[in-house]
Image (cartoon, rainbow, N blue to C red; front, side, top):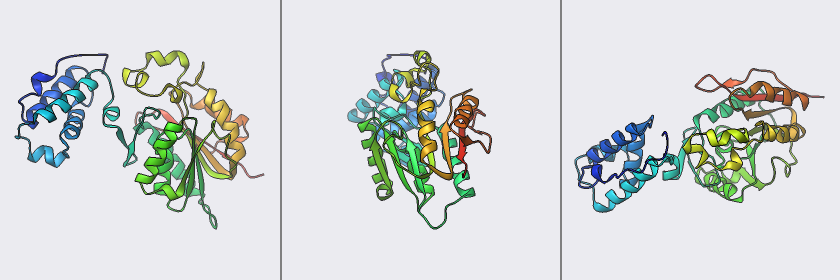
Length: 302
């Protein structure tokens, strides 16, 4: 979405059938620059009417009620003003799992799944035997990375840290909703300061946007994602300089640190990892756009 728009949406909602209202909303979103207008219109209509995809299809010809129209109009106005669909609905899918969001959490993005993929590759190559695997997620936010890993590694225990108590509450709620509360703990602290370890895997999607770049971000990000989770300092590396040495101290020998990187940051992150006596044994993992997104290093045995 290119910017703030405040159109009247009553013309394609009031008195409409479900199908015509959905199509009208999709057309308005498309004209405003939404890249996934059809999907967004379907999601917003489904939420406003309390219908899944099957319901939207089977009830397509039904007129929407005044109450449904009012709800859909509200959703449409918010989206056309630049608010992401995930913020409007309060939920986002990540790694095939549903995650509730809050104002203190990032919207989990498909790019971040590269961190989960790489962590699983590394873990499965050197799976622990005779003890329970331990995972830490630094700056856990909604808990998406940690809970995705716990979902894939059934015997693991995980700890998520965050400065925001609100974010930690959101992560705890997601752990409970996913049936993972008995294998996850959440701690308020700066990076890994309150953790003692040792951990087999430490993962993180830290803030990495240079401060001066934040005003240039899309409206969906700069006005709706928490700046605490975006702002990486003057050069974008403040969080890495803090968390990498902490992680190195808390890994088991042979354990791995995996972090998300911004575009063009992977090489400098590897340098910081090397300075903390961590060893790179593989190239970064690219996201779907081909950008090196997940960077890893291991703690070598003495």
